[in-house]
Image (cartoon, rainbow, N blue to C red):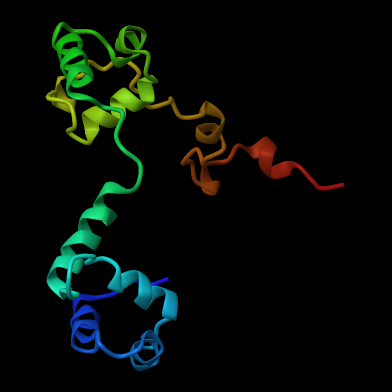
Length: 154
């Protein structure tokens, strides 16, 4: 299902006195879509701009809303400024630490990520010592001892 554009709405406005079937075939839309579109302006004639604004407002109201309310934002910011870690803040606001870190990094909370302490940061692991031993020692074959040269394969 694609969204009806403002151009299509203006074409509907021009053809509003024709049948719904005729408008639907001209625009390549279903009759239900055209019927629904014509009912966006219940008072009087259909107006494309009013219908477009109404559709935009309805489209922006749908979807998932953020759980970060202004009160919750204030509490989280206050605790972080006191030096609390996000893991400690989650007990006060009953949200996952991952969510609090997400709010910080997305700048939804008034707190800079650079102000976070190094808590929870991973350090580089030491390299495996076995891989260093497998590398060539660096001595040439001409410097080998005589006993190594006298060995024979069996």
